[in-house]
Length: 572
Image 1 (spheres, helix red, strand yellow):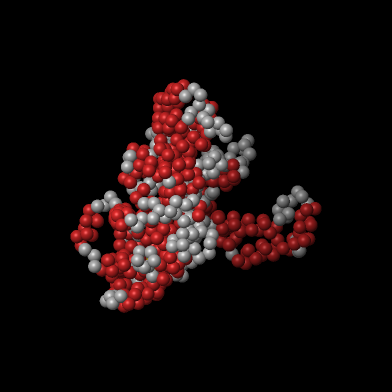
Image 2 (cartoon, rainbow, N blue to C red):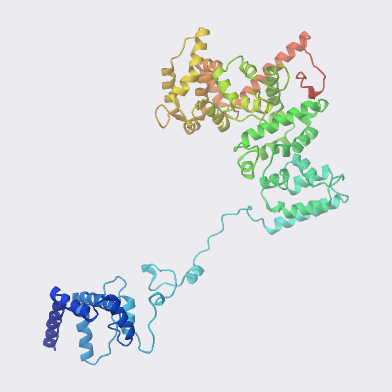
């Protein structure tokens, strides 16, 4: 039996070698071509005789013959054919070879199914041989459970993202609903301002000053109280009891059709603060200055929280800011001057007095020459020119060449505290002449040249620009040598202000060169105060002493004229 197999193998090699011989192949091709001399004639003849499949597509048949001969010349194919012949000779049933997925078998899965499928079952198409499931990794093909069965045994991952806030337990919601019912039962005729304060404090758990904007938001025009239905509808639609505190404040302040809080939306809240806070009772006799205090507080809030510069506070801005914490402190503190963030009257006093000193003609506008007098002429002409080109921030004032009160608030907050992000961006845009996001030596030299000239005029020993540049490079350690970016300044924000003062503020530059190390150490120990807080405290004391001295000399003059004329003298 073994000898017969060897003979068959030798015959198979001879046939394959003859088929692979070029002369034999060419003779066979000539024979096929002679049968059908022209492709068009061969095609016409083939269609006329539908019973002979061999002559219908001779070119395709020749290609298949060549491919079959190439496959048959492979050692694995010969071994497979001889094995099948041996099984047929012994009378055993012919079964298809075990197809390995690695591709070691010369037969593909589809060809194996086509050759050895059951005669009663038609072969499946190549695209339907496998079930349309997602591919499974080799490690999970055998002995693995289905995915849905594995998920049952695996530990469930708890939910960690709640776009509308974490869900509130049912008992908390029930307690809040009970408080609402008890409160509305007390105010059976509708909620007034005291009832709204109780609602905001007990149900919403927010500062009482937010009761004023909520009252004017829910009241029906022409009514004096807020109906129970309006309160219940607002609580249910906005899901107030389920939201976090900052979201509740956002829903109280914003208009129904807006997804942000504008400056005008804060006016009712400031009106309530001026009306109810004990630390501001003395302003009730001067309503015109109540308006100025409210405007200043609103401008300060937007200075710190409005990071987009669009004049809008989104929910994200409120979450990032500290307005709610400042309102809670204001609600608990009777001395408004202890609330340093936004609401301090002393801070308003300093800002407004500085504005009043510069606005010499009291038209409520400041020109370039007026701003040059700020800080005893400490600023250079070139930096003032850049401010009025609106490089740092577009002016709200519509008068060309004039700065309004809101623009001045932005300026003074940025000038006296050069450590926060807003002030760093403000002055960086002023110095970045080519707007490429980098401060280079030529741009810094442009501003420092005027400082050198002023030092020479004041008989001060001039500091060479090369020395200044090396000192700033050592202090700020920029990523690229000789190039300062906004990111470099924010990484060393406590020292970034020194760079700005050296370039355009002569008084602060000289103060830095002659600084007292003990005073610097004291300021570092008092970390709770910002540079603006220290400046406002010292300036308020100075202004108060000047006011007392003027009062003793009888030189105080207070003009009692309507505010619209913009000719009031500061009554401080």
